[in-house]
Each structure stands twice: as C-alpha cells, then as structure tokens.
Image 1 (cartoon, rainbow, N blue to C red):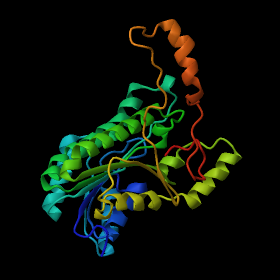
Image 2 (image 1 turned 60 degrees about the horizontal axis):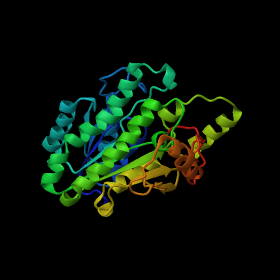
Image 3 (image 1 turned 120 degrees about the vertical axis):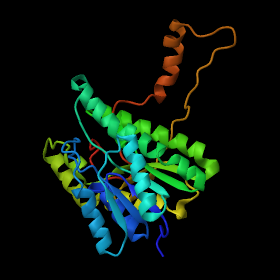
Image 4 (image 1 turned 180 degrees about the horizontal axis):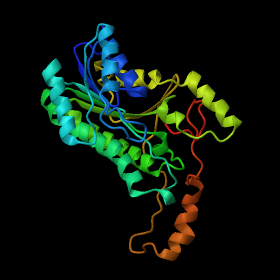
Length: 311
C-alpha cells in the first residue's frame, strides 16, 4: 500500500529538478500523476516543449505507474483549468496539487527591468494563484484536497539579487496560509515548503571563490532534489491530514518548521497622549531597536548549504 493509493496528483514543473522527483515519488506511492512542464529553460525561454513532461511520464509508466503529460504554462488560468480537466478525463478526478514550477531572473534591484519582474511574478505568484483557483472549487465540493506550494528562504530571509523571486515567494506563503484558513471547514489543506536542493536553479548561482565551490560540491552530494520532493509527497497524502497552514523547510535530511510573523514588541502611549514624530524617534525606536533584525541573511537551521545560495 502506498501513501497516495487511489489519489490523483497534479505536479507542475514536473519535468526537471524537484518537480520531476515529486512526480516520480508520487507515482511510487500509488498516485496517478498529471505531469505538467512547459519545457522551457531556467529563465522561461524555449517555451512549449512537451519532451520534459512526457519523458517523466514514460519513466512512471515503465515502472508500472499511471501518468499523463501536459506542457501548458501555469501562467495561463485557462490552461490550468485544462490540466484539471485532463486529470478528470484521464483518471476520474484530482485530489492534490504540488506546485514547484518556477524560473529565475536574478539581478540587483536597481538594474531590474519590468520584464525581469513580470516574468518571475507571473510564474511563481500568478502561477500559484492559477493552480489554486482552478482547483479550489473542486476540492471544496468533494471535501478533499491538498496543496503543497513552494516558498523560498530567499523570501523568508531575503537574498541579494532576488527581489522579484523573494517577493513572489513571500506572497506564496501568505496565499497558502489563507487558503488553509478558508479551506479548513471543507477538508482543504495548504502548506508550503522552502526547499534547498541541488537543481539547475541552484547551479545557476555564480561561484565567486574556492570556498563557494567547496560548498557547492557539498550541496551536490548531500542536498538532493528527492529529499524535499519526498517531503512534499508526504504532506499531500492522507497521512498528513491534520497538517495545514504551515511553512516548512527541507534541506538534505533536515525537515524544518518555520515560525510565522507574530508581534514581538509593542510600544504604547496612554489614551489621550498619543505618539508624536519626536517621541517615536526618541522613545519607540530605542525600545524596539534591540529586537530589530539585521541585514545579514539568516542561517539555515541544521543545513550545510552556503548561506547565500537561493532555495
């Protein structure tokens, strides 16, 4: 018996990297899988090739599983509705979405073009909206549905050169939380994961010195795509039915639960007195300053990967 026996799962970005391993592992756990991949490059170029998704489907079928491929873009809502219809027509339904589809267009913000911004937001933020919007009514009607969205430490912690990517990934964390809150009464779950894995995304980060090269070698050996993929599959299975609204990390054999923003300090004035610009500067800021976060990137919990490598 597999953890996903009887379930149908849509995996976006399933032709490469973490998405590919998500599709393969979901099939190994008994799911029937819709493998979506645009077939483009890391920056979203060369769109429209069905080869990547179909290659993964062929591997699943060769191992005795069931899979169907799709090469449409998650940036198009109608196309995502088509993926849902494909799942229903081919396998009779849909029960979970794993959504790692993504691209990078890294550049310092003062050099970022509208095209750099729009392309990343379209795939990550708009794509997450699309896969959720195209499936949410079905999941609510059948009282059964699970999402695994993909956030990133580049959003949770920040990462120089990735304002577009980080902004989208923080937005996805908020989207996931609210879908979880709204979906609770209909057994619709949503979680997100910030993965660290040796994929073509992490390979694209420039190597600046020998120390970085050494850390990169450790990543390739210890931090693999199958590790966050296995976690993602587990989280959309019935075995994790009690878990929703959480932000996780997966790095190597480390599974991380992240905190979510909550108040850590409050400065108040007596009723009728109120804050002035001067008192804010002289009183509120000094009181809060010891709890300010610095501009250094937070270290990854229990991880051996370089601190500046994007998830």
